[in-house]
Image (cartoon, rainbow, N blue to C red; front, side, top):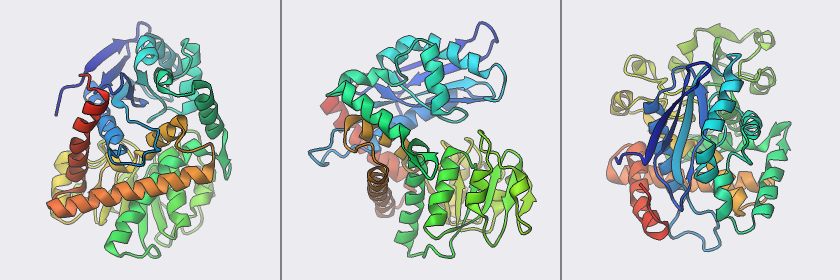
Amino acid sequence: MHAPLMSLTWTDHLTGRRGFLVVDRLVRGVASGGLRMRPGCTPEEVAGLARGMTMKEALHYDPEGHPASRYIPLGGAKGGIDCDPRDPDAYGLLVRYLRAMRPYVESFWTTGEDLGLTQDLVDRAAAEAGLVSSIQAVYPLLDDEAEARRRLADAFALRVDGIGLDELVGGCGVAESVLTALDRAGVPYSGTRVALQGLGTMGGATARFLTRTGLTVVAVADIKGTISNPDGLDVEELLAARDAYGTVDRAVLRPGDRELPGEAWLSADVEVLVPAAVSYAIDTGNQERVTARWIVEAANMPVLPTAEEPLSARGVTVLPDVVVNSATNAWWWWTLFGDIGADAEEAFAHVRSSMRALVDRVLARAEADGTTPRTAAHALAADRLPVIAERFGWYR
């Protein structure tokens, strides 16, 4: 694993809180990766996420792909701020961070929402910090900047069942990852049970797509604890009762719904676990509680490497974050570069076909090599990165 191109730490002059930026790699002079805000965020965490972004970009690049494809991968980067997003100082801190990072955002770092932040909030803070856009560094690579920006704005304005398209495409990709794994294993959707940690943007959309495909969500966890019902939860009701942070109002629970401790989702009697909230959720101390057949990483880095080894040894398949949650990032660029238009059905169709092909390729590689899906995904990325470097440059 190579060292990142750039890593920096910023200290806020008003609060003393720290923010970080890691640029893992530039491709065509640009790197892509979101900005997260959470208490306890570290430079090591941000570096791991930046490396993951490099791999996500590489995995969505097919060197022998369709000649009409316009999206060419970028490098990987990530930003992080050590602060609780609910803190009264959080928004001012975000604005000052972006003001300090303005030269990098203007020049080579395209960013957007991640854990703890919404795109609306990032956009508002970016404007206040004097930025044209949080993704303005990519504009010089576009054939028609005005048309591309209009197309992306139109796509962000689309709503499906009252929810923004941008909040749904990532969960669509996670759900398709689950379905691809089930299909390869010959497991029917009906009767397959799911537990999720996190009912925010990614977890909520994943739950919606999975239930609409016939799977049964029996447990969800938020900051208040786990809501469980072995007969299945009313996902739509729970989603409608969330606050801005993905916390469910318990007043909507039905008589058969039970409130359990926060970690109860982990040991739920299910086939599929979807950690869709924080990093490092599954460690060596709690991995033994997992009875699911699959762990599907909707969050970034939720399974520690030291936990994945014993999980794999007892037959639990971990579908890695660099594959599973990559659809949101890819959708931005497919739309901006013009591979798809500002159309929800076209977006979902492209996400489904692309994610199904990618997950299938990763699982096939894992079977052929006798490795884990994560090792297989890393191997595929390693195959593609030199090709990307040869064709578009490699700055590190």
